[in-house]
Amino acid sequence: MTVQATPPGDVPAEELAFNFRSGRLCLAFVATVGERWRGNHERLRRPSDLARWCREAGLLDAPMTITSRELEEARDLREAIYRQARAVISGRQAAREDEALINSAAGAPPLVPVLRSGRVHLTLPSGEAGQAVLSTLARDAIDLFGSSACGRIRECAGPECALLFVDTSRPGKRRWCSSTACGGKERAAAYRLRKRTEPDGGGPEA
Image 1 (cartoon, helix red, strand yellow):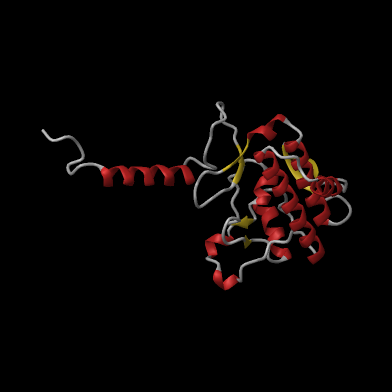
Image 2 (tube, one colour):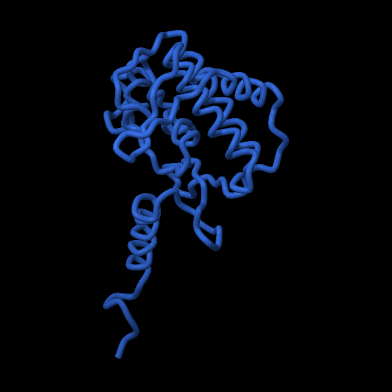
């Protein structure tokens, strides 16, 4: 299913910014749609947006060219990963069509890790850049959905968020994608509510 993009003039600039709070590459890619429950803000509006996401995600620092066809394929892969994650969260069986799409994307040569001055960098293999990026994302999704970490996929409890993330906390009871972002907003809202309902003076009378 293709996400219907909101017209650019109707979307605040901050809604088009990428975020990487999911704790997992493939789920960060899912987050290139904002406000899925309301606005469905498409953040990958043109091929250059996908190239920019790759740079900001730390996948590649070299220039790359993405075609319009690769952008469409990227959106299709993203939605398959999203539906698979939602199926996991709700305890449903994932659709075979989504698994097949993810597996197909993973079949292309992925980005190639190389060592440079003792640090790992990802480089493009021979072939199309976009296909290598999608293969890398699909392989990360396969690794996530096929591992014990699959049971740690969560949806942020923030009423204005719903970001999918992997709960890496020891007790496995995280409610928010970020304790400083959505968690902080929730605590601040709870504090304001308590202050409004407290008697004047903030405590019992003397």
